[in-house]
Image (cartoon, rainbow, N blue to C red; front, side, top):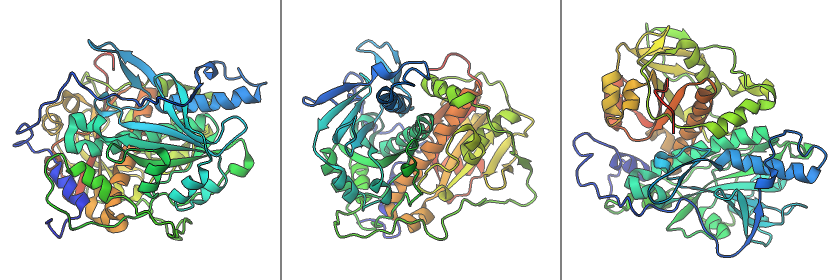
Length: 514
């Protein structure tokens, strides 16, 4: 049986850490000739082609309410998870999408559920990114089942559409084995970040729901539970209809904390964690969805004595009229493959932090001033600075409430970062490397083992805001989910209780990104 002091989420995190001594030992061979399909196929159903509604002119459908409605939905899906390019490979073209994914494996699937509108019949739809179309694979009224699966979340009472993100586990596990669950949730977090932005561009407001009955969602979407699981539900409030300008509700519900589990061999840990973090099927369950009177607030957790403190207060990034530049950025975004080593400026770094952590500064530009996360009070940020003009080298804690950087180590960590990032040159050559962390023990105490999903989803969401801001400023950016976990804390001075969730490298591109 398990260590009674560790929950299954803690056990999973420990078991999937990379260690310098063992990372290359007993690794199963990857069959590069048999990669998983990064999309779903349906043998029956009706198809709605969304490509005719991608007219570039903003007023292309200004006198056509029907065309305008479809244009908004079409562009929402394109900017969230649509195809944005391709790479020629020996077997078949490899297509790139608007949201980044570890290894380009795209484990997420995106579904649209309609309550039944004059233009979109009730039922279940799968977004077919490869043809930019909707596959209507189930035609009955399913909204009541969605409400029941989501414990009668109040936002679903007054909305007509909802997006559901799922994960096809093997797409990522094929390459990353059990550690893939981390990447799956980070990748889905990228997608949530894109959905947030794409909704703002198209007059929707997504309301994030992480608390749902997993088995009920599997049944609703006809998922094979061994292969695919629901991760997040996002009802879409239509901001062009005043009645749908809805109040906020809770996004996360706690699960049980599993401290007894059988011995798990390699290849079993991922599936066991996902199963253990599910919420039970209980039609009689009652949930108070109103936000608590004292919501968890993001605080500046670390204030080191006598440390250098640098203000990050800055004017917001200008995204232009009606955020046209943001849409272009979302569709042109690429992960950087190499950095020149040339320095960033302090102004650039704090602009990235401002866009990512201070969304209230962007409400005047049409963005959501308070986008949904699961619980950002649990996620911390540290930055290893190698080359930023105007900022001393070292490791810093970012205090989002005070809007300042607080130095905790005084050193250039270029070579150590190269090692910590598994020998990837991105870590060595970046101007700054940002680390998202969380106190896993405290997070589990608050939300049970399901919090492992929430933490990585939120980290990925923040990472996607960093991605978009960096591209807008003409900088290079790339996320890293593979690193030597324990050594990050030891080398950079990050408190040992902080589990590293995600790394984002920032710098100047050495060449074209892919």
